Image (tube, rainbow, N blue to C red; front, side, top):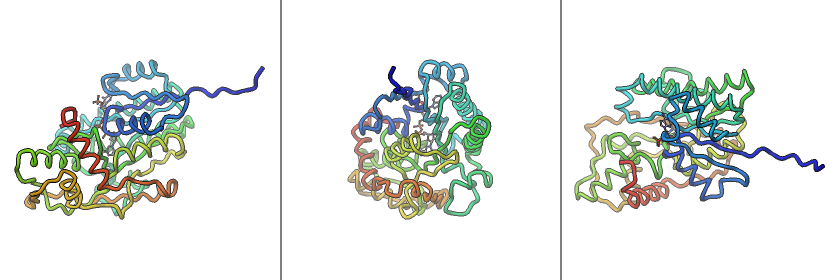
Length: 323
Ligand SMILES: NC(=O)c1ccc[n+]([C@@H]2O[C@H](COP(=O)([O-])OP(=O)(O)OC[C@H]3O[C@@H](n4cnc5c(N)ncnc54)[C@H](OP(=O)(O)O)[C@@H]3O)[C@@H](O)[C@H]2O)c1
């Protein structure tokens, strides 16, 4: 008899697989050799299972029997929707996260990487923010429902480890953008909404009106970079404590600089900054020192190049883009 020990096949289930981050991971897996031999990757959308529902969550785990889970699914929305529906965001996300984590545990899933967000950090804090500060004070009032539900993932991860020794962890991305983002001008994330707005202004021959002075500063991460980093975390990151996934503080840019990159990529002239409108938070700087300790040489795509690729994708895929 041979003494070979056969390793169990790896099946990675990605919840939220049809969204911005899920599509980026799918690209890395299928087109950049991110998938290793013998692995099977399954990308779910809400059509496969409404994860708010425990029965549907169980059924989808029963169907695919994953060994690993990347948990991205979340009820997300623009500022005004959050302000109107904090309770709904709280309840839906608590249910989604609890269903996914508990079902993963019951099915013996060995590793779960969930996605938090840098917008869940305390509203009043010192900068730069780091991974140890998540629970140090109330989140911003506008999206407290979403933020508390997301913070609970970190609490749950520690409890699953303490009680069952599970390696369930989380990543904390800053502002993500890229192909398949929500480009809606009212509800989309700032960069993608601005890409759509610029494209529209160019088509209609009108000026581009940017809300606010353009001075707030942000760290943007290209979705494909985040996809590569999440796959690294699934394979190599052994801590339960979360890890910030962001470009460095030195790569933070003002909204004005980002707009300049967008108008250059779309070859547009005629931008106006409407300084009568509110600027929002001036900065939310996150520290990526922990990520850099693990991956000192990870090559983030330069912002200008990532914006150009996203603009190209948006123009080419306008018919299918979420606008
Ligand atoms: N985008 C950012 O800047 C950012 C920053 C930090 C953290 N994050 C986090 O990253 C994760 C992915 O975000 P994203 O930007 O990729 O979001 P997204 O593009 O809006 O995608 C959301 C995904 O979740 C799925 N989903 C929503 N409700 C669901 C439900 N009830 N049951 C099952 N699936 C459901 C959606 O499925 P359908 O396509 O079928 O609707 C979609 O696949 C989220 O956890 C988010 O909080 C995002």
